[in-house]
Amino acid sequence: MKKTLLAILLAVALIVIPVGSALAADSADVTVTATPGWVSITVAPTGYDFAIILAGVNKDTTADPIFTITNNSTVIMDVDIECDGWTDIALPPESVEWPYADIAAVDTGSLNFSTDDGSTWTYIPETPAAAAALAAGVGTGTDPTFDLQLEAPTSFTHVDEQQSIITLTASAT
Amino acid sequence: MKWLVALILVAGLLLAGCPQPSEPTVPEPTAVETPTPPPELYDKTWISPGKVEVGNFYPGARAEYMISIHNGSDEPAEFSVSYRVTDNTTEGYEPAPPEAEGWVTIEDPAPVLAAKATREVLIVLEMPGDAEAPPKWEFWIAAKDVTQTGMVQTELACRWLVVMK
Image (cartoon, chains in turn purple, cyan):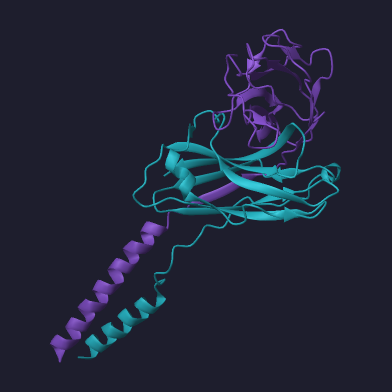
């Protein structure tokens, strides 16, 4: 009888000890905290038509318009810029998209941006490449501006109208 | 004999008093307030918060948080909520490992919001037990109104900053 009871006690002890260890392993809690704040921007204008372009001749918006990012955020923020390359907006099957690259070539054009009225131009990367920094550490109530430049192909074999969507991504600094 | 019975009783009571093993609990977000956004943001599209910080994270761990998305336009809008590789990282943090995209679950990646409506979307980060990550790493959750039609569109991102245990 005593042996049976001792065996039971031993079994109980063996059960209790691993339970305690397992709980200790889970006790280092993961923490999740959030900084209250709202991230919000708007941009105007939202469109621009470069119209007819000539081979090798760049066009930009320094004369008009200038794009303004209205910073509605309650936190300091960064704004990055990227695009989705070229889309031929003619109906398929005739549509032929230009390649998008940072150096213009035959049927190959690119888009650049400037935050200093066209003194310097920076290539706008195509998704999924990392976006370019357009503005960093933008304080609340500060509204950055920028211009766009189309770097025209050096020559054309496809003259369909091309379109690119530019995305501005805002994030808390 | 009596002392053995007493010992069994005590052991039984101790066992009953011990917390029982259960499914790992998901930590409740701490310091989580959902303060009311400023009234001037009512007609603006926004996300909140700007940053989510995960601490004491480890392979096999899970963390979750609700981000809020607000449609400030006068029309219903569909949003795309997605994992995003960082364009830049917070000082001291590295970009998330490429496989981290598979560790993130977005409860509703395509919410449709009525005009001026706000929606909470659950983001779950669950790291496999055999995975590896830098000591401090970062990824973004981006929300974009896909009903935008202009050539220049906007997207809003929430930084997730993860510190490993």
